[in-house]
Length: 97
Figure 1 (cartoon, rainbow, N blue to C red):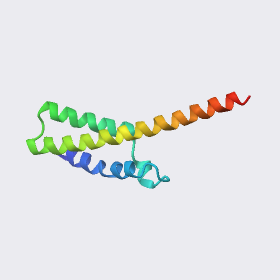
Figure 2: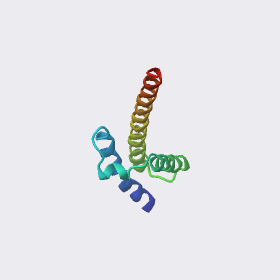
Figure 3: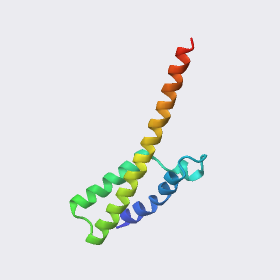
């Protein structure tokens, strides 16, 4: 149960990070990690699959995992846009030579 408590506590800040992803860097953004979030999702899935949770906890953890998946999707979408812009800039610069 301690793992679940720490998992719930560690998932509160990334939601704020995603909501403000287009704003300048804040301290909460530096606390969020894609890899850590994926690990947390995998932990939740493992607990659900193993049957380690009560039914209410399954729904609660499932909701947390969905929220974290959305955060990861937003993160990846933003990074893809950044890469596209960098590639476009590189192409434009190479065409000007």
